[in-house]
Every structure is written in structure tokens, then in C-alpha cells.
Image 1 (cartoon, rainbow, N blue to C red):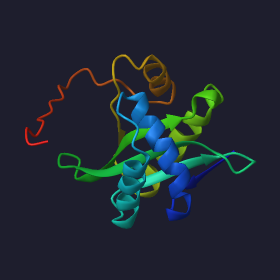
Image 2: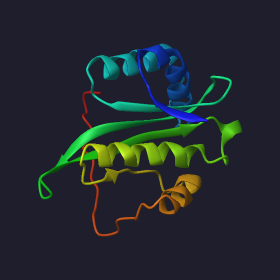
Image 3: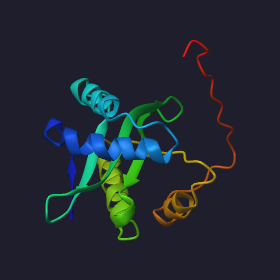
Image 4: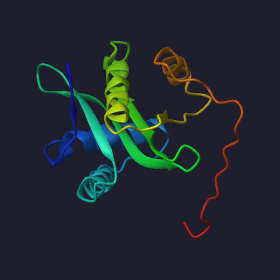
Length: 150
């Protein structure tokens, strides 16, 4: 198993994984939309993608990070926005390998850290993240404004 930075050469495999990730979060399948979205992120250097590839060159999982900045820390942070492993390969440590690669990026870029959010109902993720060194922040409220035009 190797974790590599996702590039345009991985776009087709990443689009399949990204589409499955969206379906996991109850979104309609849209493979072409997934491909277009990821292509745009890569083209504009909006995010960093890592992909888990096995010995048979199969893409088994991915993660996508977006750059953020902390005004109080006066440093970069990374939003670990997406993490997905193909269901038949879960429980084999792939998620932890992907997270470790994200941590390496944070250290390499001298970032303050990694931020993530997940649904309360994501029991697997809510067990995974503390075991990977994340702490649940119970001191902050997160709010979201949704554009009514969408």
C-alpha cells in the first residue's frame, strides 16, 4: 500500500471514489460532476489530494484537504474535508495511513494543524479520529449560513 499525492493522472480513479464518498453522505450519484469538480480543484491548486493505491495499482481510498488560515495563530491550517475508503477495504488501516500523510503535509507546510468535521452519526469516523490523535473541540460552536439562491 502506498499513499501518493493525487494528480490529473489519477482523475478517473479519484472521481469514482469521490462519487462514492458523496453517495455515502446521501447525495445523488454524479460521476461527471465529481470528475469536473476534482479537475477544477487540481487545475486551480485549490486542494491537496492523497490517494491510497494497493500493489495491484487499485485506488482504495482518498483524502482531500483545503488550505485555511488562523488569524489568532497567524499560520496556515488545513481542512481535512474528505476522507473515504472503499467499503470492502475498511478496517485495514488505510484511513490511518491517509491521515498520517495529511499530518506530514501539515508539518511540511508548518501548519498549525488539521481541522475536520464529521456527522455525529458517523460512528466509524468518531472512533477513528481520536485514535489518530485528534481531539473533539467541545468549546466552540460551528455555524453555517446557506445561500438561499442555491
